[in-house]
Figure (cartoon, rainbow, N blue to C red):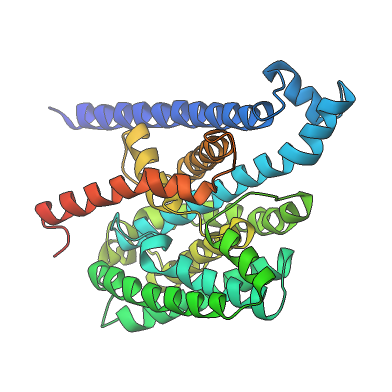
Length: 346
């Protein structure tokens, strides 16, 4: 095979992969839109799919407009935003550590953000943007603590996961401590929030996460090229001129802040950050961080899980975090089994 043939083969392969990624991106965006519309349509008062979008903009029967705009639209929007935040955060962490177990849930960063949020909720009475900022600061401090303990002349992903699990266990224990000592009303609010819930969320909960994601998502996508190079290893990244430590630190801060934004808005919605990136990569059939695809996958997962939680039982609503936990736990067990058998955990 001549050099020209090799270059032609590489060019065709890149074009095929790029075309598949575009198709998957469009498909996931449409799936997210369908899940969003179903969330607006289905409930105690069912509204035709054809009428939900006009009602969202104030056109149609008064009752339908009220149900959509006041009750279902903020919750469905929050599901899309929270799913995108967790999905992109998980993709950043798993690519940085080059380990499928390294998601904010498993590393204890979600537990650290939850601890700060519960302290803010029960001790200081925080809500809205201050609560989101408290969750983000807690997640950042937890990430710094884990990074400090795990760094020994370099960063081993296996050591990072083990220390993250330990720090997460301590944070969870402290969260239980503050929760059990809280006033009854605050304890009930914290219990609902800790289950990862969108129940009762309104327009006042939208603004904080929108403001944070308007900054964090473009910044994270802009850093995505450096993340691609970092996946090749520190030596290769340094050879092509990437400032490894600075890029890793910026990506780590972005990933933690994304997780903090999701935690502050809906609580620790389990396994969304963990499964979104692997599902996105499997759909696109290509390696790499797939940040945008992971964000769209997260949005679809949270929208569908919240819809199931609202409609599965006639008498009560089940928190979205419980639904994602039930769906995600088998994947974690399968991943642990296959990782151990393939030796990746060494």
